[in-house]
Length: 128
Image 1 (cartoon, helix red, strand yellow):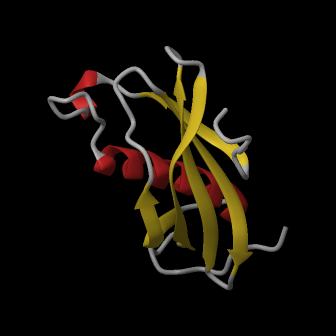
Image 2 (image 1 turned 180 degrees about the vertical axis):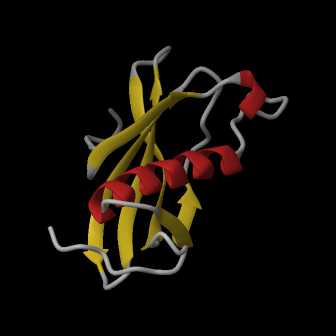
């Protein structure tokens, strides 16, 4: 690991960065990384809401390092707030660079998810 930093939150999603997700220089598109973070947020928030959730907002996201072809991308999520219908998560993306035996934080962001009922309208998040 780099700088003795460790991921915060729960490992929610792992995937492999493939050539189809990269530019000609071998750097993975930022949109692909963000999509993986959104998927992880949906998984974690859906588990907490016991139902359907959608992304309402993404805040404070900045890329620190590139993800390269062949890196394993690990997404860690932590629920930081549960509102009446919303769930706010702190999300970190870490790249495991197998060739160099490194684990580096590449980006982080705040994702806000909203619970939806059967009618597709916001619904209260159940108590745990």
